[in-house]
Structure formats: structure tokens, C-alpha cells
Length: 125
Image (cartoon, rainbow, N blue to C red; front, side, top):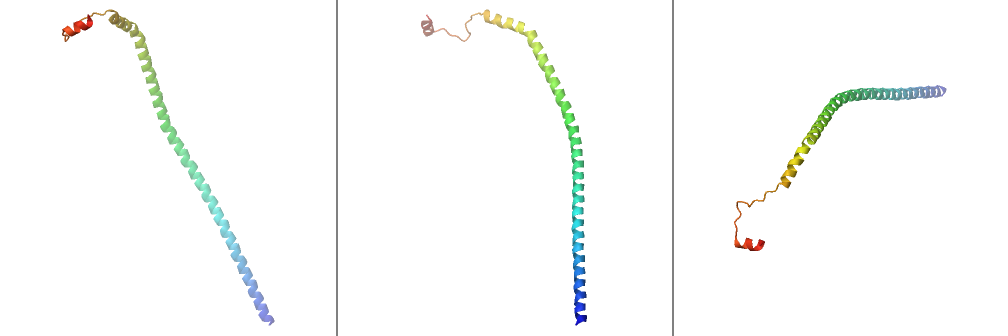
């Protein structure tokens, strides 16, 4: 019986060692998975930063050229406004004189299509 009990003890010890090895393997596997996840996260962050940097560079190139374009448009607009304003001040005096002359110099004339009738004479007399 002692040999049976000794055999059972050996089997139990072997089972315990196997169970310990399985648990240790699970721990190593979990540790490897966590490490792989951390490495993947770091790689993803690095890739994201690289792509964002490229995007900002392209955006600054595009926006820079648009900024120059808007500056040119603003300069042209300012020049046109100044030209219109100077033309206004230059021509204002002569236009006012022409307008006032037309208002003051009224020359009453009868229109060509006007026909004199007795009714119209009676109404206005």
C-alpha cells in the first residue's frame, strides 16, 4: 500500500508541477500579449504623429499660398477703391455744375405728339 500511496503522491506532485508550468506559461503568454499591445500602441502613436506632421506641413504649404493670394486680392481691392475715390473727387465738381445747370436752365417746350383740343384748353384755362 505504501507503494500505491507513494505512487499517488508522485502523481499528485507531477500534476502539481504540470499545473504550475501551465500557470507559468499562461502568465508568460499574458505578459507577451501586454507587451505586444504596448508596442503596437507605441507604433500606432508614432505613425499617427508622423501623419499629422505631414498633414500640417501640406496644410501650411496650401494655406501659405492661399494667404498670399488673399493678400494680393486685398491689395488690388484697396487700389481699386483708391482709384474710384480719387476719380470721384476729381469729377464731382464738374458733375455737380452740369447737374445744376440742367436743373436751372429749364426750356419749356410742347411735345411733338401733343394735340391741342378744346377740352384741354377749357381745363387749363
